Length: 468
Image 1 (cartoon, one colour):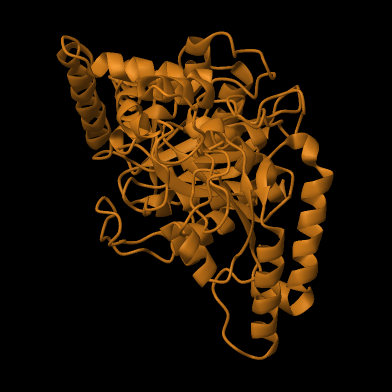
Image 2 (tube, one colour; image 1 turned 30 degrees about the vertical axis):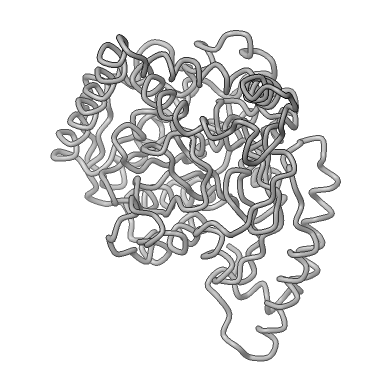
């Protein structure tokens, strides 16, 4: 845990310099697109002086945080890890960055990610692939791979990532850290570059449950700048996590434990289920019958939204421009040279499913399936308070292993996309390592705005692992 006691025992400017030095000495991870060295050191000095002079400091004073290169930080380059936005600097802070700074967090850098958040391995970045700190030959997961890698390598205290179909939880699982996707609407999306607007969520990645709870508490809440943000009150998550797990009803969806799941992951999760049962949780097998359609529905709907959202990147208003006397060639050249293969693939797929003659067959049907998946969760949460599933079907795979097979790559999100389709919260909990010394993650999901249950279970498991 990091907090006010750090300011009492250690100089925040020196601590910030230590992190900057560690980041520079770990450049082989390629986790960062931009270091905010001058601004971070200035903030650290200001916060330390504020504390030393007896003034009240913010809730996050002492914490050094990084954010994904999709989240606007004023005057910092905002590229979304895409060549088309190289050189573009944000004119304002996103709401989440504003809230972090108001609570005296030190923002130290901007992390690498899959281009426009489109990917499951962080190999789709114009700045190159990110490596997994646990094994440099393996991927860190995506699209928030840079954020997860930075936390896992102890290059910061915590990070913000974004989750459209698992992009916080999956890299958290691959890198052995905690990652929480909040309920859709819990956290403002103002200042987040959109991939799929009805799916995108901002959430914390950290080395402890407490830090996830602390940061979620700060960044949550209604924002007048985001019409999709919810007015629900924000619980004091950091004070509720130690309430224990006795009496919690936990559902085990049978569809998530069928063929395709690695045996070591299956056994590790069963061990945690047994542990929770012994400590007073009620374990029930449940069914989410439309789970098999989640990947198809997810990719149809998100590519359609991406097609609409990314139409603005044409070389005319900002970003790189392909100079031509013909405006059509300027548009084509700017997009062809500025956008990566995976982004172009998803834009084309999304344009196709929205086109005349195919809209009803694909997009409309995808929306109907989304409703069926939401109904599945609504029905299950009448019986249980949360669900335990795998986060990923396997541990982190090798760099380059799946880049030539998009469908195989997409299946890495098989256990995470359903939470985004339903808009419910989900969290990865690191629960061990496999025989190759790679992390194993377990996912917990709950009903809308019930992040407290996820954090309580996570904290309980974290304490048990520490004491064993």
